[in-house]
Image (cartoon, rainbow, N blue to C red; front, side, top):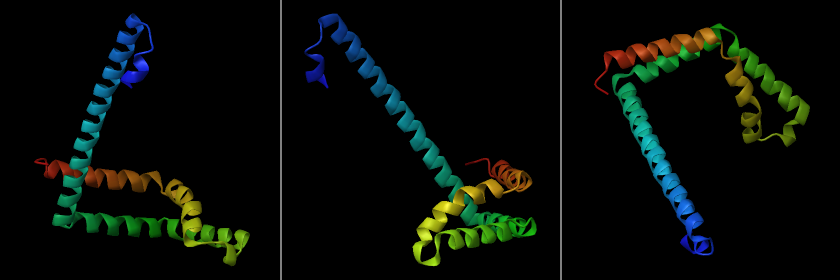
Length: 129
């Protein structure tokens, strides 16, 4: 990087150097924040596992998705994709890539809100994280 700056006029070189320095510091701060976020997520996930709350949340989600017909809708969509492309031309990876966006979009807001509330309650009860 410095070799590139050498061919620039002196005043401009200083400004470029300061910009590069600023960007490096900014990126370092962002990476540090991301590392802290990742550490926090890992700590929360560990606590969810240790307390058994993760399994309870997964079971609640599974039950709610079956109850609202999400599972049946997604199963029907899988069949449509296989029918359109032909069984010989569809891999599991293709199917997952095709249905994942629709699967996420089909999750009712009420289910998302209920799960989010349960997670918030859990975090409030375990505020030492």
